[in-house]
Amino acid sequence: MSRLFAISDIHGCFKPFYELIVNTIKFRKSDQLILLGDYIDRGYQSKEVIDFIIDLTREGFNVSPLAGNHEVMLVDSYYDREILPLWLMNSGISTLESFGIQDIREIDKQYLTFFASLDYYKIIGNMIFVHAGFDDFAVNPFTDKHSMIWECRFSYQNPVLSGKTIIHGHRPKTISYIKKLIAEKSKVIPVDTGCIYEEENGYGNLSALEVNSMTLFSVPNKSF
Image 1 (tube, rainbow, N blue to C red):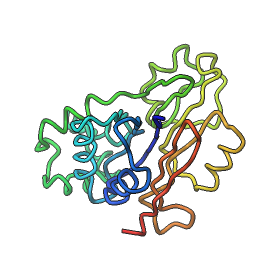
Image 2 (image 1 turned 45 degrees about the vertical axis):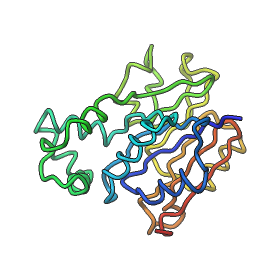
Image 3 (image 1 turned 90 degrees about the vertical axis):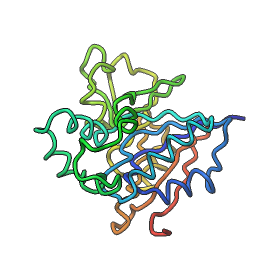
């Protein structure tokens, strides 16, 4: 039986990402993986994370990477120097260092193309995958890109989203909190367990939610 996984907010933590994919969930070509954005910044192996994602797709694995606010800030910084300070303030420097460059304009075009081509959401059956959330008051919430990468909500009333379960990242939550929401059959499930914040109690894990069974798999960043 094929499995459907969602992972969010890797933030340059390549080693736990690799461990989660290869040894914990044992990702297979018959499975599907939705990545919910924020692959870069904060951690020190952003390039390795992106290369691994690209390699998986080239090898025939079913991977759908979505845009996070950090990827959008990178692309915006490339085309508009006025945006650059915002990205650098959000740990963009760690990504530049990971790619071995000093200026975003030096990034290899294949990576810029990767970041610029990311979709903002994906719908599979009754599941909607997104980095953050949606504008609950928009006639068509799928047109508001800003909300999809920046705004999280605990619940939605928008009729367009009625009957859907929204899987998102962006705001880190503890494993116990997420499992509580799963047990309550919440229509909004976060999957960011704060991998980069390994020094903060209750966080510091990279998690994958197997959506069909609503099973959460986690790898602690402190292990590496």
